[in-house]
Length: 229
Image (cartoon, rainbow, N blue to C red; front, side):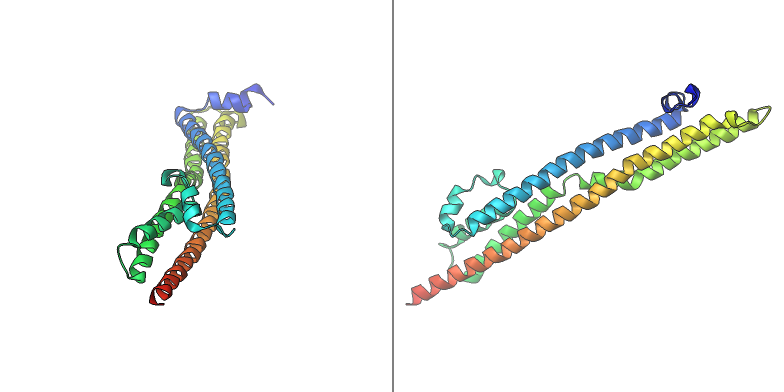
């Protein structure tokens, strides 16, 4: 390949606007990969934490003992966070009211708030991936249009229209297009993958909240029957 048509040479000698487009796309691509690796690690850790806590929860351990074993709320995540929030509210309301429904409503509100925080935590920075995925092709297209415009300008000023006159402009325009796709494609793939994983985990958290709510409901019914006896 001619050195004048090599990709590094074309990038270094591209017009200022196209270079700015390429730099913007490069920064967007690098940041999106940082988000991809960080979110993948978070999802993997969340899956592991959910599996481990569910195994402990369904092992038959006493709920009060399990609550004491869980760390502070700031250090919990996933189902453990929901459990701690719900059981703390259950213990807080139990001595204050005789209405089982009021207690269960309070537990449900606490777990809903905890679930919402888990949703925010799992979906953190996914909007950035969606932005890179949707905007990068258009940013690259802007660089492409600018390069094509430059090729027409060079044609109008040339005494003789030859391929060598317009080739550098067209080449840098195509590089801008390729960089836009290079930034967008991984962002699209991993946004869909991470969003699906987040939805699956949130569905499991919701299922756990429903099951835990049912357990507390049965617990209150048992207390009421023993009180009547």
